[in-house]
Image 1: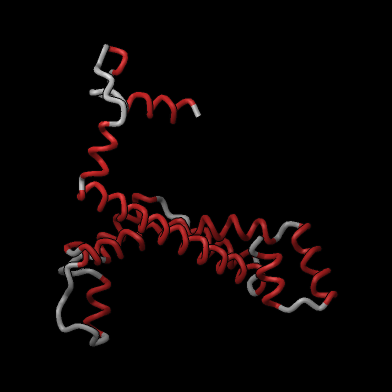
Image 2: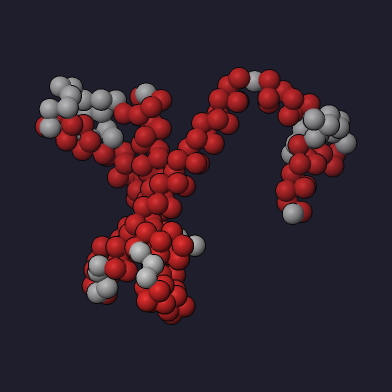
Length: 183
């Protein structure tokens, strides 16, 4: 709580980096200026949209991976060979995305042209929509981590016991998924 409160206190001074040096106290002036600035509000809206989209996709895809591993592929080899590498460091994922979205030799452009969906390469990172798509896709590099976390929870003893009891009670697949697996 202290870092948040201290940051808020510092933001109410003319210079936020040194409020202790007698900088004038401007109260909420910075916040009023922020909410009057249309570019700042656009950036805030974009950040909110990005956060909601990427977190939603990461949670859903992570759960799908965990359920598939838990139900279909219980062998350790599958887990080690296919899910572990999904937890790629961000720097490596960023370099891969730069290669995939390149407007002259990128993998995505090559696939789209070869499939006949477009007759020319697209500058993905040169348009707001394309850049948003690229950044959301880059954020999905954490899906492997979500999958591993969900898989470890699905395979612990208490969840399996509860699932077995619900099967005996006659609960269907969807009921078990929404009432046991997701919670």
